[in-house]
Image 1 (cartoon, rainbow, N blue to C red):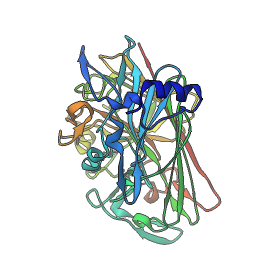
Image 2 (image 1 turned 180 degrees about the vertical axis):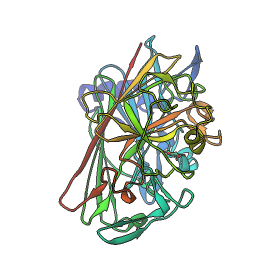
Image 3 (image 1 turned 180 degrees about the horizontal axis):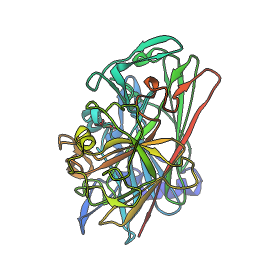
Length: 388
Ligand code: BGC
């Protein structure tokens, strides 16, 4: 372990803009105060492993406000985000495991991961593009979920530190990988800004026509990782419509109004207030697991606002994507380890995944997810934190 003096010297030399083995990441203690889980970053050594011949690590980003984010290049996962609650105490609002091995065990839940090449579902594990049918591995009923059996979430990304608050991750997906056409060169940049936001900028190019839908699958508990149910969090979503699904969660192709349904979050409501209503769509998802059609999708105004009932922490989401999957952690079963000796108990975290709509490659009526040679896929999503 490096000494504080060493770090002071590094800082003085202007060298410590970023560190994968920062002193603060060396402790793993989580204590409870007023039911908010007070967080510290997980132990960096738990992220040091070799997978497919490549080294994995934990990278720490910092801003001038004392906010920190930790990311591993194993699946490009957002591991932790330490933000101040209403009392100024730092809380880790990212729910998920605390080591690479624990992430590998919980593979099917995609904790914190970058998802590609196609986030969410492609029906019947196939699609046709420019007259040619492409078959994909089915990993969710007969469908392909989150890029297939070996998606971007289990790849070791090349990591490049730009400065103390910016991490650039790159991954080249070979032509034919998981059935998708074209070599896809992907770069995702995580940036922690001074207004306590984590900005995720996605960029990709291809050498053959393909489909792309990248997202991040962070799970959040705004009272802190492992701080119990998220059902009392309030959620506000700027969406007049959503895409109803069949029993295997493939959109029917229709856009339904949220008006008069438990999907109406245009006015803030707690996540749990209507989740157990006998609504057919909620039965299909065993809770919320649906794509909302956003009214606006620019980086100027938030499209989602969530607040933790205990911590007062508010998360606002800004995105350039036309949709967002709201997943209320229905399939979390307490089988896997979370940071701070916690488990992934049912509905103790939620995900809000910005995206193009599920199954767009088979739904010409939805906004297109095609990417052609010469074009650049470029999209940004921001998760911004404050407290009140
Ligand atoms: C999906 C859920 C799935 C979860 C974890 C979400 O994006 O919509 O159905 O269980 O990811 O895999």
